[in-house]
Image 1 (tube, rainbow, N blue to C red):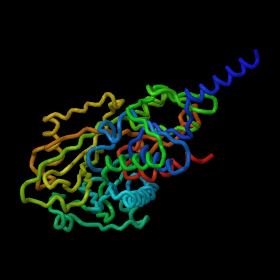
Image 2: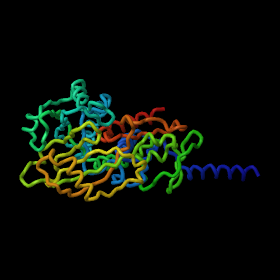
Image 3: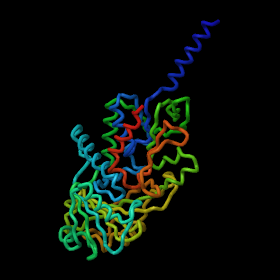
Image 4: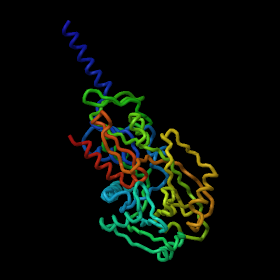
Length: 390
């Protein structure tokens, strides 16, 4: 009887290996940070898998809408400057390898109306901090008073009390293309990709992590959860309030014929009041017909599934009246289209990188708080190094 019993046990062991394929590292969530991490992990020689509840790049998260500002001197914190610089290098490396253009350098402007100090992304005195970090980190820039700035960029009706920080190496990124390209490279390097596969269970299984979704069950030695706002689905109830889900709306406004050549303009940000919402930002025109402009909102919607993804005509009209009219010239009060995305925000707007409670081989990274995309390539590189360390 021993031989049949031994054969049965051996069979069960083999079957368990088939039922539970094992990976060295699994990345859950393949947006800006997840795709960057998976790309770097795919070069490590490890067996790696990327999972996403949608099919990235998609329009449900925080990394869509044609463009994202990238800048080096970031008022959120001086320690972020190195990440921004390294990200620029990585995107140039990817561009050289693939021939796709992810980053466009246009220069970038940070405007301050000069009437009162204003905060942004957890930082008070955001304009002053940006200038200070540019000086200490040797970021090429120029400071302009209101008259000099308006002479150079007449579309901005900057108050006489205002001033401008002009950074020469700033520009914009194409978020969908960045994510798509990094995932394609990861796949070519041997990484596996599961799309439209939301994770239904994450639990301990001995020294490993058991992951279950509709495709089945797998084991992983290490896991990175980079699921954006859906990070809340993996957290205990006591931790969920740390992460706020804040709806953001992007608008494309029609250009007045012959008024201003918006294709020659820099990316720009403008703080015009003391409140976090007293802020607008925008881009050069990519089509010669419209200009993309956004603001920021910090009302907590609690979860991405609860977001209102419809933008009404009344909301578009209010945006023009409160944010654009009288400040930006050369545009018509005609919103051609609007798109909804969201920020995952912490109180101090700092990135959260830490083990999941009770699971030391599961790391979470989330709450990029609206300033994460420009850091994502370098952040992914650093996370990949952490995950491949024994």
